[in-house]
Length: 609
Image (cartoon, rainbow, N blue to C red):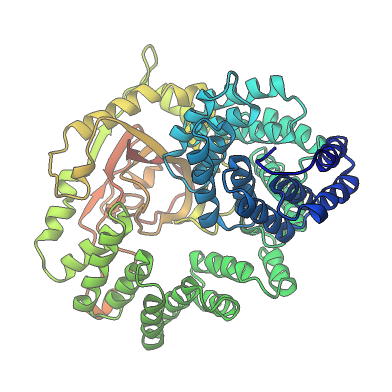
């Protein structure tokens, strides 16, 4: 209890209230706390206990008022600062929450719960200091709590240490076997590890224990989708949306799944949410994004208008509308809206990047250049920004483009060897068979670059396939050699990141059929990208038309107003077992091919660590 001058009689009433609270008699507890306050209006303990009771019954405003009254009466209460921080965080007032924790820790440097909550909030913001804060919390207790184990598992999971993270969750479950959130997190990790049957069981256990929020059903839907139980996945996503009508991931992934399944109205839930949630711009923004990725720019523009009408202060909708109009041919209005979006958010790198692309399509490369330069200044590791700056340099005849993107120097091919005691032909055939079995769709995903083909879900390299895991040493060795051979250049956006340590950020498989190809693109969040060929149709081998070949240098922009069209400068022939490595900022795509045979690849992105 805090410092106060309450009488012994009031102290007894306060103890009775706390005992009632501990017994679950919250209404009685509140009445006793108010009785104390009627006699001692500045009693800090009564105010903070009343605040806890108010929060429990869902009255956040009253809870905040009570906590602040308690602190006004007696500022040196670290536990009240901690409680206030948790309340503010739950209300979405993140900028206010963390300073409260720092106040708590200034008063009590070894306050484990405050260190833990700080770590939790930092982790949610992707702040790398979360690990240090959690370690400090851990050092303040004799045994870590289930929450600490759960958070450490999340941090390790983010770093790719999935096995270690799973072990921590299972350790936490030994001490808290009925904690549904632990079962849910374990299910998500099992899903990422490709252990989908176990993931389903863990999801079912979490749901049985009461984990009934939107995220629980959404993640269960992901596992069901990975198991090929598509209709059940549709239902799970639907349950997520029923609990949160604007759950962006559930709405988006359900629309994508319906698209892949060939449903007549893949965006039906998005449209329904747009109609029923009159104050939310989320459904319209998601629908616009899907239509943009599908190349339906007129429909994308319509949805971006709807999103902008509902959230005019969100410049992203204005930027999306501008992009869609430019691609639809309305250059003047599109460029006007691009500039309006930048006026609203001058520090948004993507807005400068998108305006630069639109100006190039409008034929005004000199005007595009400063916006591309600004995008690289604001986000120095965004490969899309560097790709566009390089394109500006190229059309302006600036020699720096060759320095930035030198296909002859940076694109390298390696013929991977098979694991020991296995013939090369046999190994890659077995690998192709195993990877091919993961392709369960009959339609290209709406939001990817491939056309007339399919792409695997999730992170391919996390699949527990022995034949795939056997690829690891040869693949890692080829990547290490590629990095070691890169020349040092501290001023180069690609070469300056050169180092020995790296990690995969994405991995997938693409299967292309007749007329299949990849639209020219870059990988904005990568550093080095790679593609490994597993099956190559006869039509793609050593042909003059280069059908099915990987090409570099052709952007996904209409530059006809600049008098430019065929800009590809290098082509690489696909061969079974051939690995091609290149900077993620390089424009690349696939030449369409004609064949009844499938072209099967593994692709990935990696970044330095």
